[in-house]
Image 1 (cartoon, helix red, strand yellow):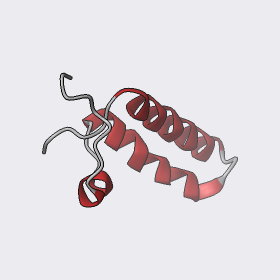
Image 2: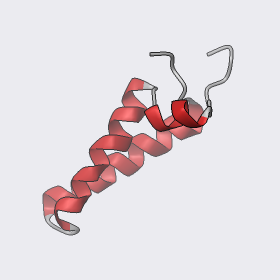
Image 3: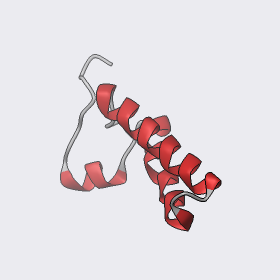
Length: 63
């Protein structure tokens, strides 16, 4: 797996994922909040399969 998520993209994924999971845990948005696991995981692992399929890379070459 070659890293393809970097910088602001990584921070945004982790933040959105954490907020969705927190809202799911508190019952605010129901079970759909658990979809936050996906952006959280892609942010933590620095790899997004969808970006790979689309040929997108937000990581700087020197990172």
